[in-house]
Length: 149
Image (cartoon, rainbow, N blue to C red; front, side, top):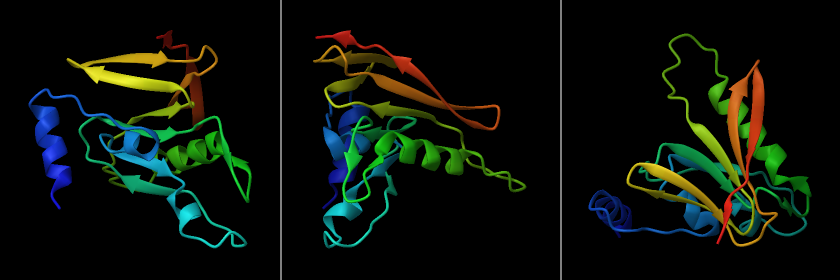
């Protein structure tokens, strides 16, 4: 329907675009998604998948970083760290992947991007954001304590 182009155009014109849950992935390069859980019968196993975003912001994210999804009950944080590592630890010759910063966004937290800057906010004190990066051959995290709004 061309919504992707409209969102990109709006962002380039400085208009705000927003996204909650899976919608927060839209402006990013890619995101960690549980969408297969909604397409798989409850008794069957499913995997988190990597989904492409619009590439407006040079990040990869997962919403609901602090949750687990049934029936596997694997912590989403662990699965995102694994996907992040596999994506950016590719040691094949001529690997042309551009390294991105990853963010795990807890429920009730958000990243605001405007005028080339990021602001980290939450509506509950314990809702944090986790910055992912590679260090020493593994995925490392740094906890960001957002501003309560």
